[in-house]
Amino acid sequence: MNLFTLKMTALVLMVLDHIGFYFPAAPVWLRWLGRGAYPLFLFCMAQGCAHTRSRKRYLLRLYAMSLFMTAWGLFLDARFPTERGYGNHNIFVPLLLAGYCVSAVEAFQRDPRRGGRLLGLLALSQLAYLMLPALLPFTRGLSGDVLTGVVPSLEVNEYGFAFIALGAAMYFLRDRREALAAVYLLFCLWQFSAGAAEGDPQWMMVFVLPLMLRYNGERGPGLKWFFYWFYPAHTAALFLLARVLL
Image (cartoon, rainbow, N blue to C red; front, side, top):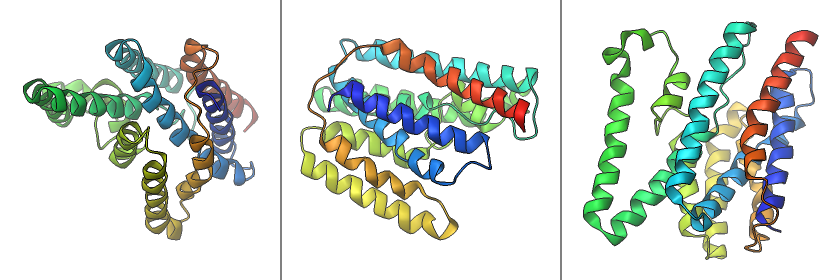
């Protein structure tokens, strides 16, 4: 199973999940299936970091898309107001942070001074996120989900710090499948113990592990920009369709 196939599988699961999000009457199993989408994208990010020709450009693309999704969400909510709103859809923030953490750790392993600078920059960005409302009063009315799209926060993002750490683990264990499987299973077990009692189905992400383990190291067809732009396009389409029908 190549990287393109994994991305397409993640894309299908994501669409099913968002159908369940925008249409409350949809079968609940759509959200269950959707729990596997982000871990697959996270796995693909880890492989992308390992094989991209330019890690810097790769991370800059993720940040540019994070800015776009922030502006896109604000535009849709302002132009097409609804009771539920467009929702917090910015997968690029945690992907960016996971990729940056990987780069910082690798840099530290090669050159502690350079790695320390990268980690310091990350720490400064976290402080800037906390201080943003005080420094720029016009941002006080904006939610944390909006602010993190501009100044990425390790804590405030669509999936939280735990998944950023999981993405880093996926990268460093990418050539050790048994260790990767063990870490992933323990993570899913933790998700089950932490959220199952409240009805959180995120632990169901365990069912995409066999797909990750079947990855053959090949890239497959490119279509790089398709995946970047499909994300805002399909969420907007479902949001507007739900606005008309509900």
